[in-house]
Image (cartoon, rainbow, N blue to C red; front, side):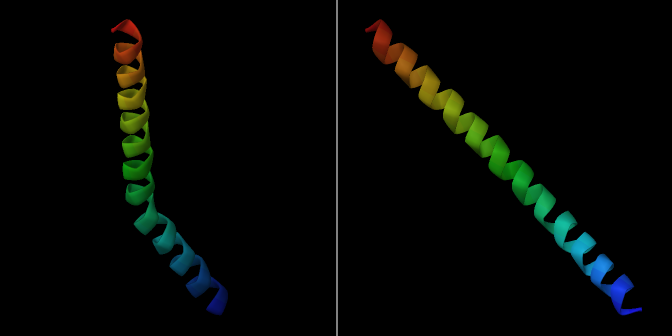
Length: 45
């Protein structure tokens, strides 16, 4: 019984963190693309 509770708790924790991780990776990707764009523009000028 205790083992099932532990699995459920970890499962809920993972599902609670998934949207946060998705947002974080998306944010990092956007910021990296922005930095790349800024570097390219500064190189062109």
